Length: 202
Image (cartoon, rainbow, N blue to C red; front, side, top):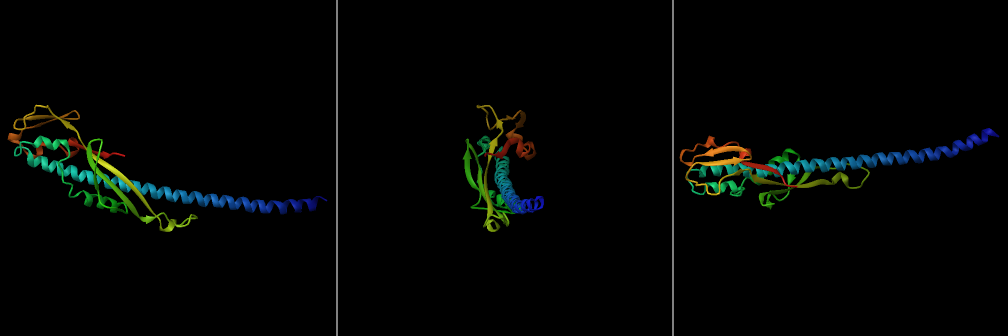
């Protein structure tokens, strides 16, 4: 009597084994699909962050060029330290270059914005690559998107009664920079990163 029972047990076990194997395979494919999507999102966010920072850094460089030209020739040269006296003509091109380097495309250019009083840019990107084929329908044609905002924050302060026609002492987050408009050379200014910080706002 034991042999028929054994065959009966084996007959019941096989469908359960197939069913469990199917569930495990589905779970594995589902996990892989979610991993693909997460990887695409992370790549998109990295591209957006890089593009936004590039746009803000381009305008920071413009600020420093304008400041360099203004010292000694413009009585309002101290106003450049407000950090908003830029046109931003090269911001979108800079964002495009960094997005392309990350296999992505900027949507609508770098958009000027202000966050907590600091000027900057918001950038939205779409990856050129797709999520890829998976058990989830449509992923093979779906592109990841992301956005980021970067701002330009002034780092230097000076006395409220500073005379732009006389030597001015700047305190740039603890680093002292002395500017004499009557005897100014472009190399008197430190690196742009000392004068203005560029960072992500969100």
